[in-house]
Length: 72
Image (spheres, rainbow, N blue to C red):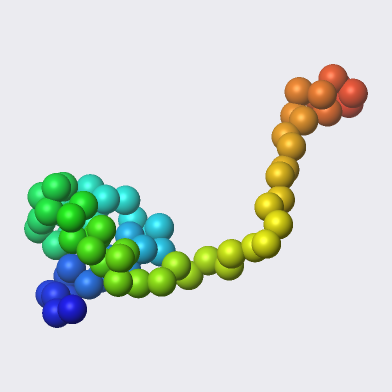
């Protein structure tokens, strides 16, 4: 897949979640819709980079309960 340097940079920043879509579109002078289409194509050609765990981890936030137990 051939693309301009600015577009490749924007795709990599989006893919790694360092930029948002409007920021990336502005960087390579594309419209929001053009960027969505281009990024969708980019994602279909690249494998995910995160680890896919067999078991899910659920974290529970008990902020309010902890605050009541330890008022400061």
